[in-house]
Image 1: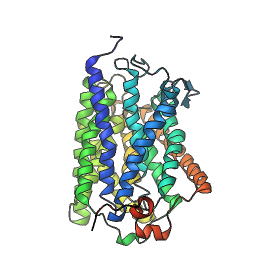
Image 2: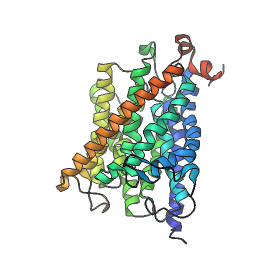
Image 3: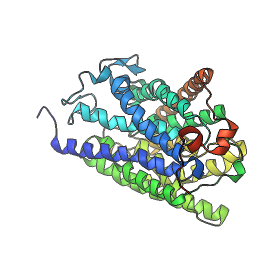
Image 4: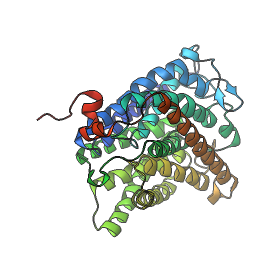
Length: 408
């Protein structure tokens, strides 16, 4: 049937639905961590990304990521408006599933990435400014980086850097952009009195993210094979390992293990394994998740406090730092015995892969930071990025949407 494998196609349809569920899961994860006067606004950010990027991807996003290469930087307009994207496979990307399904699977990655940024600027960014930001950011930041890493002819793919399911493309890009947005927009008022309003909601969100992440990572094998199954195992194992090490850090430093810490550790483990899920062994994933839990705990509890930046829901600490560690870990632990299409890492005698991974990380960090700063400054010339002090005190649910999450 035109090279299409029915089993692979069925699997990726299921994986696509799983990844789609991650963005509502993120809405719950973030929504529980803000004050109750801002829960609707925080939740709406994730759903807005779903709506906006679903249109942007069809119109221009997919072709910028996966169209014919232009100088290793971005795709051309051959798939503009999904022209020519149909049931036949595109062998450059997935030879056994329809290209239209590959397009949908990739849409779910493009959808959640700008939603991740919203956690950093929660409780203080004007809603319409956020809408404009994610449109421009997706076109100017996400789409080029996705092409660099995954597009046929993309310069990082050609270099030999590895990113199985989006360490650079999703997590480093969003995490670094989140930090820049925080520095441009500034801190919230009355920071010392801010506490999460519904931690069970956050825990439910973490559980949905964990569930959906199996589609995120295992689905990135783009077929039913040993790579997909390995990615499933390493994803689950890394999440568990990071939750354990995060909890141990809390127990040592704070003498208690918190529910928020457990949820954060799970997410950090999932982020850390994302770039290497299909390239490393389950034993390596224990180290990757375990170390990731310690590193991210340190950044969120110590570094953020020292430098006093207001990354409200720790988008940079979880996704930026976790993604950077995951990219480096890929260079250390990757094995061709796990995935012949990958490369051997440092522990298998190949120092070059660490170098390729560092180049990819540095390029992603620099490009994301510079472009995000420019985008925010340009938007700021035409509209206010931040709500007024009165609107912030009132709460963004009322001031931006005219609604309350919880009745009297």
